[in-house]
Image (cartoon, rainbow, N blue to C red):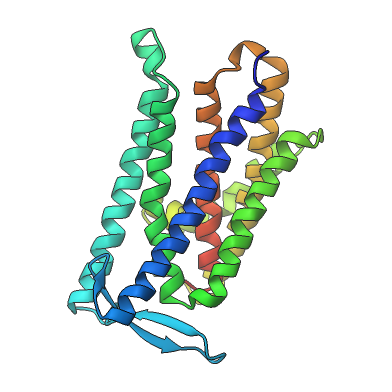
Length: 267
């Protein structure tokens, strides 16, 4: 008996999502451990401070002081992680297109391993953004966001509700997002990935962060709903490789949502 297509998609998506949660939590733990011993971690030095509630709140030393060594290191770290995330995303796409180009499909564990690598490279950025704010508060928001995304995927793929009515709404709703980045002269790939931190008034930036967060959340719901229709109408496409492709699409949208949440909360 063949395993259902939705089950395959959820196996890949769930594995990456919960692996990222584990890596982010582990990264923060290692940063706190390094702060206690005075050692460096991820080429950064951290100091221990305490928030208004008396909770430990790490701060990367001089990470916001332009021209300092830690400022350069944290920006270089962001650049390397984003670069590797982009490279591995392209490798996933290439591995999934292998069958069309060569005539036979690669084993599903290859594109899935590359997909997992995209998550492992983006996780340090999530963790550092949490630390630069207040990890005690934002870790709850981060966990709520990931669980919320997982719930949206479950609803879209398993509830039996037809969400295709969202297609024209999302199509029209994307226009303000496109205009926002175009008018403000933000490089498209950079802006659509992590949002904007310059050239935009704070109120406008925050509004667009919330707007984009809602748009991508509805898009995630529609994506998972489309996967259900694919499973029902095209049983011949019930392969592990196709499941990786759908899971990768869901994962990229999830990354977008997480960054929008960070931007909306002022990160």
